[in-house]
Image (cartoon, rainbow, N blue to C red; front, side, top):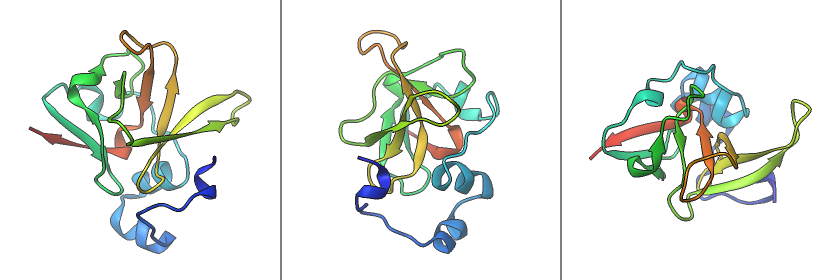
Length: 135
């Protein structure tokens, strides 16, 4: 299923999204962009808390699942149950699994099969797609 094939709980017009997101957040979350590696302060954030969608505040990841992947993007080995949807991304002459917020459909990043135990997955997220809420 592509994100355009389903209805999301949070729906906004392009102008409404632009009014609540920064230009970089809009480019990544709504236009499937990618931030430059090593530009997000969340990459090196290791405090206790939750990582939520920057578009709709849905909790996506717990700090307990974050790890340093060395890629320059915040990485997690497991999302919160039901928080993430995936689609196949065939851009850039490769096939990847793209991740989206389950509630608003915002583009978050990609998931790869080279992560640590126990899941073996690496959810490689754009930091601008997330907000960190300390606990």
